[in-house]
Image (tube, rainbow, N blue to C red; front, top):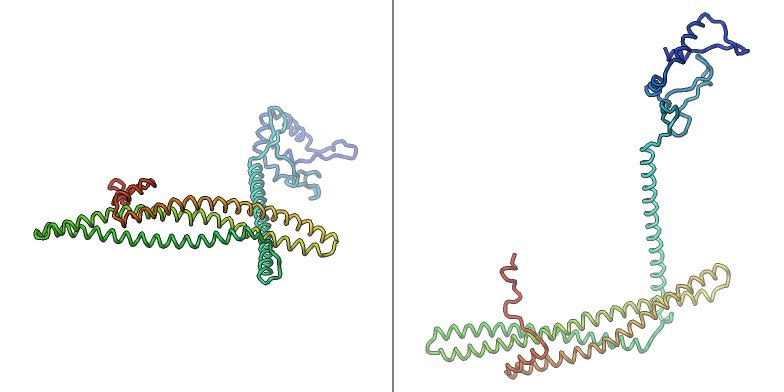
Length: 370
């Protein structure tokens, strides 16, 4: 009955008075019924009624033209919820919209960060390509004698001496390792020969004394050989540290210094070339940029040159101390071994705090085996 009453039309005349219809009594009953609805029934109707987005407002009466129909879905605004107790509407904030906003904001943040990383990489590649081009151009110009280079004669001489010293020390290291390998093989042979002489002394009663003397001599030589091996191994380890760590670290700094020198000369040549050109606005901006880059690479070059000078001085001092100790050790150990002076050989090892590892020390114990 309510839906029928909601769609019925009350005709009006031009003066606003109601017309005379035979259905006046029924209209009065419908109106009374509408006003008699309490708040509980009104709330139930609002809850169970049709969706506002799917209804329309009729402005021209029942059976009017389509022009008077306004779809409510086209009306945009915040969603509301009717509270029948306080007779007011409460705005509803949807959880889905907030989730969509957070997702969209997070996706925008990720997109902006990825875009920033891409721009950074692009700038880095651009700067690297420009720097490589300038350095290659400077290197080719130097090789063909068309470009000038910055030269520190004293420092270049020290660097050349260091490289020559490193080559000679590497040769000493190679020969000392070869001596160690030969001496180790000899010691193993003497050890096996001593065991053989001992076995023959037990099985040959008529030559027991002769085999016994030779067995003791070979065992003594084997023991002295192991002592000498300990001294030579210490010598090899110290030379290896000096050549492959200390000198190599200095040479790495020298390589960085030479690269900085090449970059400095490349940007210096670029600045000189721009300075000869016209003094217009564009060229002046390029000159300012080139001057800034030139100053940056000049500071880097001077800093690395100072580092190389300091490391070369420390290397010379360290080399003298190390080689003085190692050469004395090598001489005393070799002399005592070939002189057959076992006490002097052992005293040499104590003097340089060298501890011999017992045979089989390299092998893990049965507790450490998997």
